[in-house]
Image 1 (spheres, helix red, strand yellow):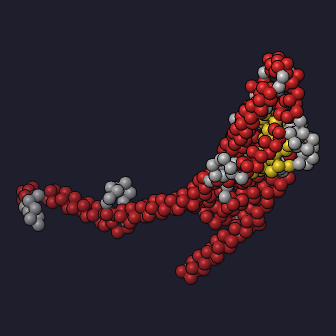
Image 2 (cartoon, helix red, strand yellow):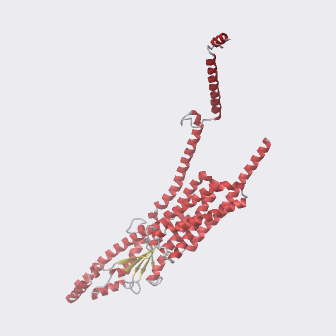
Image 3 (cartoon, one colour):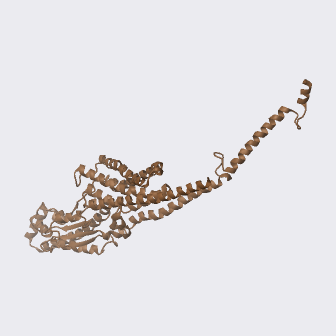
Length: 486
């Protein structure tokens, strides 16, 4: 038996000299075959995870999708850039060409009927300036000469500037010419040349317009006009002295020594900033901070879109629509209050028009209205655009609002008049009223912001209903197909 076993062990089996070796090779062949079968299955079902290079043929279709998505994004961004960036650039690019849209008053009180020489000279100079004489094209304000009885006192003039009838007013004060003549003859050392003319302006209305156009252009016109007129009146004065008696010249010399300003600068002017732009930090709440308000509302929209997706499939339409409107409105309350609180350490002048507490809480109310109007707009549009494309609406929302809030709309092409009905413009105006005490349009501003809120309160349920009906139809079709398959 042993010899037969050895004989069998030593014999070849199907050409293999050893049975154990044969079995091992068969097992290995089986394992390789199994692996090849698995590879064939995986190859038939698509690329394998974590197994390919970027340029492998197996991921070619995925690579195509990848480049398509990136390419379309670049195309959409370029289109958005040319549309909306051009809108913002255009809002600032032609401001200097619209300076004549800035209006001003000139009021001559020099003499009982405005016959004083200084008043006549100022009126003539400002009328010529309005016609563009002596200045580069359109580099001037438009001045209207008013009868002194229209605004009987300088307080009335200041009120007209604050109430934004005009951007500036220049007043030749009562009897300016005769007061100088009297000071020269009497040697009045208390004579102040700056009392001759008063220049009123309102920087808080818009600091860019005031600092770039109203103040520098008016200053330049007054300085050039007074320089020429002072030289002329001095020449006439000294010429008259030269023709006079010796005693008269001696008396004049004594008077000039007592009041040298009557000849060194006979006439001057005083600039009065009725509503100063008091805090640099105010820029944060007037423009940049309002961009942050839009971004905060957008973050809530994105978060709400993700969160409501968990429960919305199980809600009736009425319950779902109420949730979409009311939940953001509630969330905006602590967000807007926190935004308002951030301003307190930076000494924003909430007490310019009201008490500090009253101004602060009114500021908070308007921030809330602005956040609701802008935030609910993104809440409505994400329904139609989906999270994939809502960012493009955000770009449009920010730029269309900011374009009309940085410089006065009167300094922009007529296209930008749409800004009068947009949230950021009205929120900015309301904030200026609260922190600078500018013209009170709070009722109008609140009305525009509320209109945006109401619009979104209508469009959010409407868009939700449209998409819900589409989803319900898709669900019914799916259920019908499943019944047919069964």
